[in-house]
Amino acid sequence: MTCMSYRARRPPDEPTRPLSKTLRRNHAECGSVTAEFATVLPAVMVVALLLLSLTRLVAVSISCQDAASAAARAAISAGGEMDPAAAAQAVVGNGVTVRVGAAGQQVSVVTRCPVIPDPNGLLPTVVEGRAVGIMT
Image 1 (cartoon, rainbow, N blue to C red):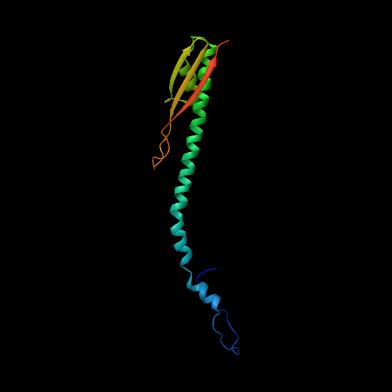
Image 2 (spheres, rainbow, N blue to C red; image 1 turned 135 degrees about the horizontal axis):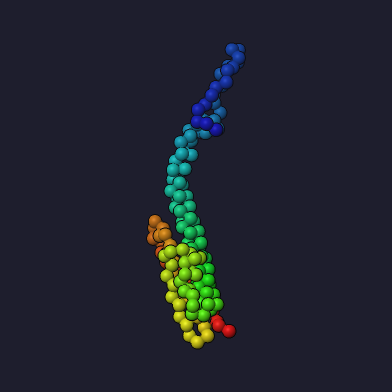
């Protein structure tokens, strides 16, 4: 319903009638929708921004774990010939830090991937991925 009241044309012989109470009440509350929208809009924007930041964090976390798995697989399959950091960078891209540790038949890889920080600084700016491979 719009806030403007339109009056229909009446026949000349019909007497004028007062507006009903509901029509008067709706006309008096015209600005309330705008005020409620202005009150709720910042909260909706904050929730939307938080959801987008969480989505980005989860996506980077998954790709960082995939990079750790690829680096562990490369370290085991190539023995000592291939650089596991190159395999991790092929999955994630530049900016990933790879740490490889070997103990006997076991190779452990830890990757650290940077995340774009959210405006509030609530979410972490670096995520880790861990993978362990066993040589047989």
